Amino acid sequence: MNSTILVTGGSGFIGSHTTVALQQAGYRVLILDNLCNSRLEVLSRIKKITGTEPGFVKADIRDSKALAAVFQSNRIAAVMHFAGLKAVGESNQQPLQYYDNNVNGSVQLLTVMKQAGVKVFVFSSSATVYGDPQRLPLTEDHPRSATNPYGHTKLVVEDILESLYKAEGDWRIARLRYFNPVGAHPSGLIGEAPQGTPNNLMPYVAQVAVGARPRLQIFGGDYNTADGTGVRDYIHVTDLAQGHVAALRYCEQMQDELLTVNLGTGKGYSVLEMVHAFEQASSKPIAYDIVGRRAGDIAACWADTTQAERKLGWRASKSIKEMCDDAWRWQVAPGSWA
Ligand code: NAD
Ligand code: WQD
Image (cartoon, rainbow, N blue to C red; front, side):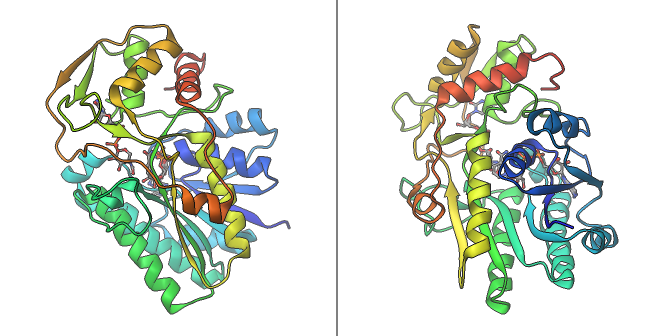
């Protein structure tokens, strides 16, 4: 039996692209997902891209029995943990669900890993842990804070991982802080698929371009940025996926370290710049209104990528044109569920 990487949440947006990257790097992947925000069809799409269908277990990370059975019947070398809930607004309405899925779920998973003696763990954290930036670009030592339950779950799991590493130094843990993942696989076979009204900018813009929604609301035109709209560090999801492969390789070699790195491009683009880039990619006009600020939003945020480059030997390479071209290809692909 070759050893396998267990990818929780692997049928979701970032997990599916990372599964492709892992397979293409020669790893065997077993996905564990409860399909609350993804589809089984992703598996055959991954096979179309890589030639290999990943293993799949339909289970919830909070189900310790099911998790233990997975570790008993597979030789798992490492876990990449994407499974969780991610909608900021919903987390304000249903905080218990968020703490249960994201915090309790992570504790259950780590407990079963410890029992099974598997101690390599790559965690999906978020730039949301930096709160409202005191300085830019954001370095990993910037103070952390949370303004909503979702962000707080990421902060708490980061702390749990630090405590675990302090208690048991033989864990190999990476805490990866993603900036704003966008785009889709260039094949047009997998991509982001928000349920209901998209919360995030890029899927919303794509739905306006395709005619599924009439107009974009731009939240705030009076920020202290070049054009007054919010600035973010958008990163192509396939670059992000490669960052995970680099982090896994680093974990396999590292000693006496708890790795915490930003995965971003280091560049910020405004909402209006992204809208115009998407208009170019889709050749469709994006109708918009500039409305009031969204509660909890920050003006600007982008990563310092020095640590990722120095430690992982990884840097994002794809432009906003490629992000928009690929998101559009996925949006209009026959068989897309975007
Ligand atoms: P996603 O919703 O597309 O993928 C998450 C997957 O986890 C889904 O397939 C869902 O079915 C599964 N899942 C959820 N709860 C589960 C549970 N209890 N048990 C088993 N499976 C469960 O989201 P994504 O955008 O791919 O995000 C992946 C991870 O990255 C999440 O932890 C998210 O918080 C984090 N993250 C995402 C972003 C972003 O903007 N997309 C930014 C920073 C961090
Ligand atoms: C980007 C910009 C909005 C929608 C969120 C989470 C964060 C992380 C990534 C997981 C902002 C503007 C948006 C719209 C708009 N997720 N916007 N109209 O807010 O940077 O981050 O997703 O960890 O935790 O908070 O991303 O895509 O929602 O917004 O004008 O309909 O687009 O105000 O300036 P955000 P986003």
